[in-house]
Amino acid sequence: RRSSRASLSGSPSGGGAAGVSGARSSFRISPQVIKCQADWNAALLSEIMNDLVPGMLNQLRDDLRRRFGLEPSSLYRFWPQRSSLEPPMGQLVPTSMYQKLASQQIYLAAKGTFLKTSEG
View 1 (cartoon, rainbow, N blue to C red):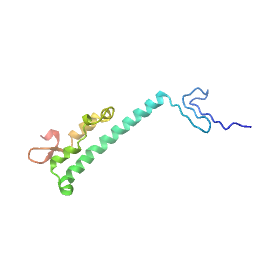
View 2 (tube, rainbow, N blue to C red):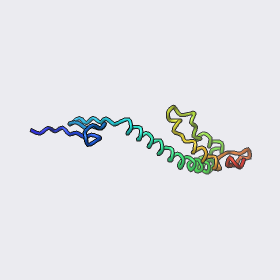
View 3 (cartoon, rainbow, N blue to C red):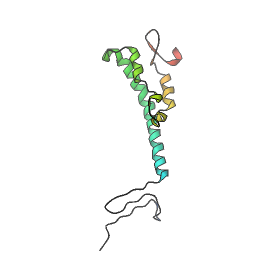
View 4 (cartoon, one colour):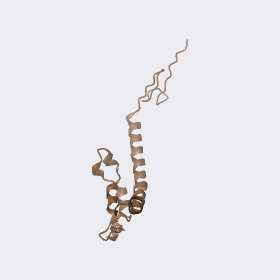
């Protein structure tokens, strides 16, 4: 009678870190794979934040009064703040996103208009 057990290993010699056994599957993933996945996720999150957050704040800036009836200063309620996030999430907010935000007209000036940091 044949065994219904299956085996999957991370290397041809069977000495890898990943494994599957029988009807109840159990996986062991090497620390290197976990680190690679974590680095990938952090890089992906960074790219997403660099692209989406400035665009979302610009759109919100344009909609504050017209669509939502809010004062321009309300934009700062939605501002991404590292300090308000629990570790390790705050570390995932990229500095490059803040650099990109600095080039956007989303900083409220005393006269009530939005400027880039280089404009005021």
